[in-house]
Length: 463
Ligand SMILES: [Zn+2]
Image (cartoon, rainbow, N blue to C red; front, side, top):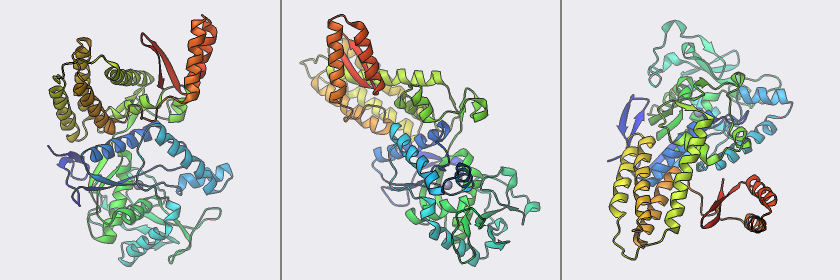
């Protein structure tokens, strides 16, 4: 069965057929670097990571571009409030963003273009729209004339109210009822960064950034554009209007949008005290892999209610899978290589793929994996696992983890420093110096590792 994806543009699940066989070009709206990304942002980035990883699992080569919005209303206001240059202000959040991606094992895209480094492409695109009469100047700023693009509203299914034609909106973000001619180029204001353009000194609006950068790296028509559902209007609607208005060609074939995230059944807001950043959660000692699993294991088109208990359950699920892998590695093998796992592995693989092929139904995809674990646990008890089974199991879990990204990397080998501490702890325990043993355990914990005492001895794992 081939992959099917829900396309917001056509409002149905469609068979995925890329423009170029075997190759996928995909664009993701990246962070606006005016603050640390919050857990809701990461829900979208993890959904995109799942999509990217599954496309690669299916054998596609993937060219993935994620922009970094380092100039817009929010970054400019932030820099001016902090009293530092825009560059200095955004640099800190750009670095934090990449640290967070790594902590959550989100694979890197091939390109992370920054808006401030692509002003020329934006100016060129605005010029095309001006030349075609789709954009116009008013009071030193350039606006997009939505009346000139008859398909305006096709993504968000919005009917444009004829009464507001000609009315303008200057903010980068606005509500659905506020569909108006939107700003492409803002007139220079004192104290704001600006660039020279043939149509006057100024700076780009937010929407033009994504049209210019996606088409530069992926071409005028590409396969997949993703984002959070809050991007559908006005941002993605405007991207379509800008790109298709300029090229006359279809901009994107498949539009995929991730549903929002609730925290304790409420919309996340700083004022409600339910606003979580990744680093805030890590400071409270939650593990990044548990957070990844929680965000990953709910289907992207269902709203997700994020709770701290949910992270703990996710941790328990990961531990179950990780402990299972360890048990397979350590289990006593049967001499009779009859391969009792071959058929269950084949069935689990098929069920895993069938579920993901159905618009990335990850919740369903995990079910056969857990079933396989239960089956193999019983076989381990019965000591019927052969060398062939062990190899097949480990290679199967390697393959599915290329999609899930929750098992420790092979470079998660225990560093010497941690091993030395663990040995010291063992000595302290032998001498019954439990206070010292506990102290060392805490030290190991603070370095990001956990130590577990098992009948086979102490086992050290990354948190
Ligand atoms: Zn965008």
